[in-house]
Image 1 (cartoon, rainbow, N blue to C red):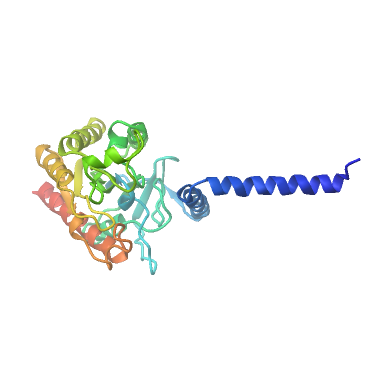
Image 2 (cartoon, rainbow, N blue to C red; image 1 turned 90 degrees about the vertical axis):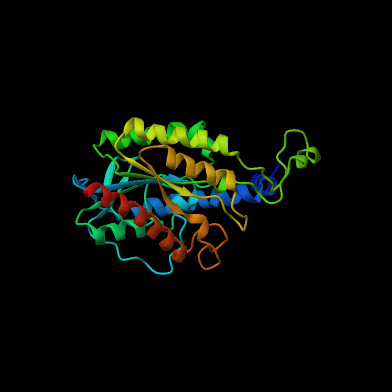
Length: 308
């Protein structure tokens, strides 16, 4: 008769071998993504417990920011930022206003956000509370937001915001890195790869026409729900040392010029260098402050125009 203890040990050993085999099969990127997700879950849930839910201020300046990672919580902080008391965030999932504290709720990541600098500058200049509504998704393509799964995600957030009686004064769109040309990619690269596989580490980039049509759809949806909101478009295309991708920049500029409530919020491609982008793509604290100031200057100009 088989010894029960030996059998249990063998079973446990087989299970462990199976797990390690499975981990070996899984890609490094997949494993890192799962670890990142666990970290975000931990930070967000422990962070939320310390935040106070408050009534959303009625007479406020509200800013929604979305796009990909540089619109989310991706900014490393060497030291904490002093947050003013009349700065708030709106969490679209719980439909609650809370005291502002990084990492912001409703978006990905567990670091700081460039919009923090913008909001603080607005508070210094205007005697009104500020509400920030973040929902950027790292690595997302504009096609996800216009045609893919994030299109429904986006519309749901607009519905949630409106249902709480919040009417954003500004939407800030910051996206383009994922859709730019990568490396020295060229059409002939597709001849050297297995059928229907993307050449490794190479991307041809979206055309001006495709990007502009997608961005127009995203702008239109915000106007359908909030026709008086201004829509800021950042000029965004560089990442990981790649140069500017002009078709995307052209599309971003043209949509901003073509639509009444749209404007250029920043030219983030000009914020370069190791001190401003810690990994040649994402902004450091210094780079995020520059970006946040660019946002503020564009918003300030529109607020001044509204006073006249």
